[in-house]
Image (cartoon, rainbow, N blue to C red):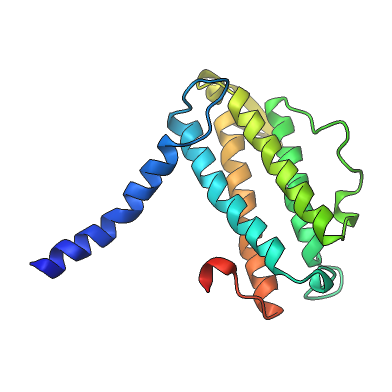
Length: 182
């Protein structure tokens, strides 16, 4: 019986942790962010933490490493993530910052890469904060397909998780264990 209770608690713990993250999600203009936007922000916090931790864990001298010719290097992947954060927000009517560097993927300095990643995640947070629950249902075309603002936000998360997986493979190919796996 004791083992059953412990097993049940172990299975339930992630649900309680996620619920706490959602309840503590950032608030937009003093209002409590709930529902989809709170869930989005909790997921964004998790993926941003992992991408940022990995960007910090990879040695600066490995930022130019690429698995094959004509494939993005480590720094190019991280800058592609930042660029994607800015670009996908345009589908919900938010332009990138006016001072966004041109040719993001040419930034190779580790400190600048990490700083631009953070800035791009802050940009997404600002976009979500100014989006109302009603706006989530607004119709928009993305790459010729009909979707909603909610669909754009889901695409953002999909894109981030795709490149997190790619970055994990790149890091491990260079002997770097993701910090959360140690």
